[in-house]
Amino acid sequence: MGSKIYKVLFMLIGIGTLAYMIHAMGVQEIWTNLEKIGWWFLPVLGSWAVLYWMNAMAFKAIIQEPQLPQTDVPFWKVLQLTVSGYAINYITPFVALGGEPYRIIELKNYVGGSKAGSSVLLYGVMHILSHILFWVVSVFLILWFVPASTLVDVACAVIFVMAIVCTWLFTKFYKKGITVSLLKTLSRLPLVGKKINNLLEAKFETLNDVDQQVKNLFQNRRDRFYTALLWEFVARVVGCFEIYFIGLALDINIDFIDAMIISSGSSLFANLVFFFPMQLGTREGGLAMAVMSIGLPASVGIFMGIVTRIREIVWIMIGLGWMSLVKKK
Image 1 (spheres, rainbow, N blue to C red):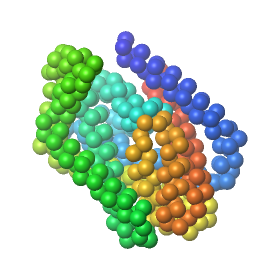
Image 2: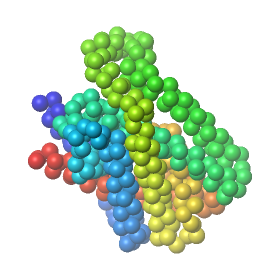
Image 3: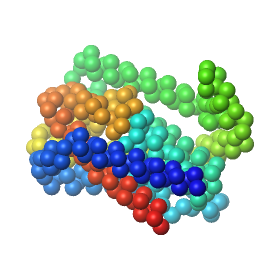
């Protein structure tokens, strides 16, 4: 009963937020920009179909354990959870958190609660690690192709520091157990600490089981770890085609390396300001700064931001629609 309530709640929030986004942008504004980009919007949309397929391949690599046949979840279901989960993430504050409960609720029907929780947690970690790897690779591209400046040097330094800190935290927590260690840390907080500690005591066995499965991936299933990380990293690269296609639509002189630099720069900025639904107001600013770093006018970045937002609206509708069909079945 509780899971059904959560599903209905996800749908209501999704539909309401989506309607607000379309209203805020304006139907006429959306149509005008679609006319401006023309048929190039189809490759933009299609590049994300490929990206989501790769995300689902990474997710399935984490879920599936060859010695446990019950973990061989149908790929279409993993793909649906991937697309619908990201659709929910786009429309909720604190990006990358909203869709995770939904994925766990749906996945536990196939593999059980602890396996579902650990798989979703591990996929989230893998998604973060692939972002860090993508940013680090982009640093070398930026240093090689972008003219030297204080802003560029600071941005590259920030990326390296973030990469080192995140990798250190990841190594520390996965060895100790991510969920138990995190809840123990949070239990020291004033006001909410006692409630968190009670939750930890009540659900310790389940949480410990999740942690053991997390450790198992890194200690005994290294091939799956690197397979999932590779799929996620390649997906980040494929996502750069969106910027490249928009550049072709505008008939501006950018190559795929430029697209990677723009994508990584705007992605870094958007993730530093992660608590806005659909990254409202942050993506356009990030894209404007990124395109200016390679000598293009800020207006190009603003247009790219609008097009990517329209693409997100379309994929949100696809994700919520797919989620609704599964719920009815």
